[in-house]
Image 1 (cartoon, helix red, strand yellow):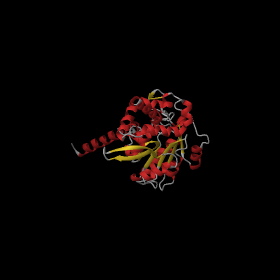
Image 2 (cartoon, one colour; image 1 turned 30 degrees about the vertical axis):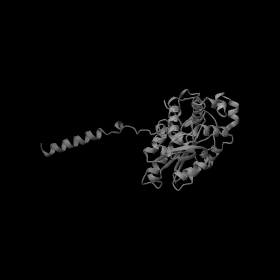
Image 3 (cartoon, one colour; image 1 turned 180 degrees about the vertical axis):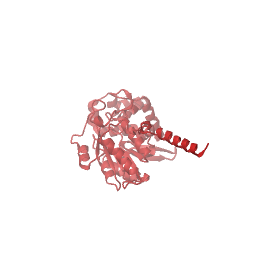
Image 4 (cartoon, one colour; image 1 turned 120 degrees about the horizontal axis):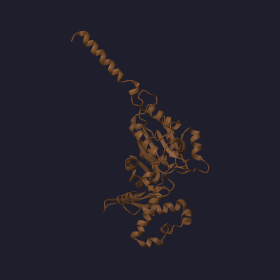
Amino acid sequence: MNIQDKKLLCSLAIVLTLASCQPSQIAPPIDPLPSWNDGTVKKAITDYVMRVTDTTSTDFIPAADRIATFDNDGTLWAERPYVQELFVFYQVKSMIAKDPSLAMKQPFKAVVEHDKAFLEKGGMTLLLELLTATHTGMTEDELEENAKAFFSSAVYPGKNVPVKQVRYQPQLELLDYLRDNGFKVYICTGGTVEFVRSISMDFYGVPSEQVIGSSFKYVFVDSTRSIYREPALNHFNDKSAKPAAIQLLIGKHPVLACGNEGGKGDIAMLAFSQAGKYPSLQLLVNHDDDVREFMYSEDDSASLKAAAQNKWQVISMKNDWKRVFPE
C-alpha cells in the first residue's frame, strides 16, 4: 500500500468517526431529579450544586464543608399523623401484652380506649409522657429491635401502605443528588434519635451517626455493660434547639438546609444555615397538595413569612413535584 492509499484510508476513518459522533447520536443528559417539575426551585437546586462543586467558581465549597441538614417529619416523610406517634401506640400495645395491668393506668388507658378527647387535651405534655413510658427503661438494642418490628408491619393510616411508602420520592432523589456531588447529609429531627436511627440507612441512605434528634438521658450500667435510657428528657430537638444541636454534633453551619412549613420547627435551622461563611441554600416544603398528600399550614404563616423575608426557596408539593410518594 502506497502513501497515497494510506492517507485515503486515514481520511475515511476520520470521516466515519465524526459521523458516529453527530449530535443526533449523543444521549441526552440524565436528569438527577426526575420527580421534580422544571421550575424555579429545581433550577435553584441544580444551579447551586453546580456552582459550589465547580473548582473554578468563586462560590466553590470544599467537600469537607458541604454539609446538608434535613428535617424528617413533613420534610422527608409524611407527618399526618407522626410516624413516631404510631410507634408509641405500637409500644403501648406491646407493653400491655406483657403486663395487662398497664391497661388500667394512664396514659396507657386512654390509648387502649381510644379516648380522643383525653389525648387531644393532653397535647404535647401527654405525648412526652407516652414517649417516656414507651421509650425508656430498656436498652438501646431492645428499642431498636422494637422499632424494626414496628416498621416491618406498620401501615400508614389513610394511605393504607407500609410506612416506607410515605417517604417523599423527590426528596429521596435530592438526597442522592447531593451525595453524588460530595455533600454529607444529616437528618436533624424532632423525633427521638434512636427511633430515626433504626431506619435512617434503610430509608434514606443516611448512617445512624448522621442523625440528630431528641434524646433521653443515658446511663451506663456496668453489670450488664449496657446503655439504658432514663425517664428524663435530655434534649428536645425543635426550633432554636436544632442549631444548637447541629453546632454541638457537627461544629459547622450547614450550607444547605431543608425543613417544612407547618410547625415553625425549622425556621431557626434554616436561618443558621444562611448565617454561615459559604454560599448557602435554604429549602422549605409547603404542604399545599390536598389531593396527593395533605394541606395544612401555620396559623400565622411564620415559616412562609421567614422564607419570603430571607429569600428561601419554597417547595410547593402541588407545583414542584411530579409525584409525591414512591411507586
